[in-house]
Amino acid sequence: MTGLIHDSEEHQAIRESVAKVASRYGPAYFLERGRAGEDIQELWAELGAAGLLGVHLPEEYGGGGYGMQEAVVVVEELAAHGMPMLIWVISPAMIGSVLAAYGSDDLKARWLPGVADGTKKVAFGLTEPDAGSNSHNLKTTATRDGDGWRISGSKYYISAVDQCDAILVVTRDAEHSTDEHKKLSIFVVPIDSPGLTFQKIDTSIVSPDKQFTVFLDDVRVGPDALVGEAGNGLQQVFSALNPERILVGAITGGVGRYAIDKAVDYAKQRQVWSTPIGQHQGLSHPLAAAHIDVEVGRLATRNAAQLFDQGHAGAGEAANIAKYAASEAALKALDQSIQTHGGNGLAHEYGLSELWFVTRLMRTAPVSREMVLNFVAQTSLGLPRSY
Image (cartoon, rainbow, N blue to C red; front, side, top):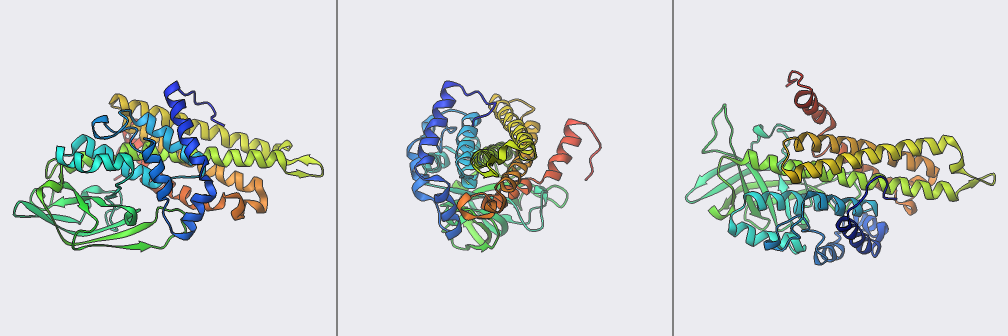
């Protein structure tokens, strides 16, 4: 089901292309790779070759020249086929968007074509154990060293580092910061840089995209690693957050579709006392309500992507609302789908229970529901700040 979304001809063509590739692999492939701790390189390479990773990136760097609306179609359709890809949100969407907007010509030429065709991946190194949602309180520090910098610190809950060629590291700039005003600088740091190591975080998340702690011990980078201007990284960080939130809305919208589709198929086929269980309002009404919520989340995500592509001032508010609405709806849909399946909802054969933890993660990351509510209360409603 594609629900209330009415695609343009271009969007429909993109959706069909994604579905064609995804159907050759299927949700079992994605889950088996996740359970085994393996990546999905074959699928990733095929998506890249089909132009479905760089659809939103500039044409001169190998992208499709479209926007966030087209990225939403790709990410949602993959998730609707049981493939919620965190790395798509991180490398093509977040990193690709930041480099396209702020990277030097050299950085763009070095990284964007590979990000667009899938031959290169870049992780995003923002979160730290003690900083939480306060990007101003980062402890990872970049200190001037000749014409370059030395970076020391650690990053926490960084997705898919083991698959990536580099990590976009957000640092506190020692030269431009004071005790009262901490300035940020951002660098593209190759994964094989001396002093950079990482350690897997064991979680309950079943996904090819694993989580890591990254350690940076006096890592030396040259001037060519800097993204934008030294000490002006906060603006660049914020430019990555709206695409991230919009595409989390897309992932969870797709998961919601997947969950509802699986539940509807099962409720039509499963019979008790010669009656399809979907005939009972005790099942049909909760599924109908879950479907409504998923569609509302999808519409909010589509609206946020449109505003982002237009450069509208309300894109940040819309991105937060989309992330909140879609992630909440997906969890309810997934839970109701599991309930519809009864005990089978927990069987590997049906591919539902494993999606619960990665979907639950989207309620907390990349920004918690409470921080979204803070943003809406303060920005949309004009209420006094709570922190």
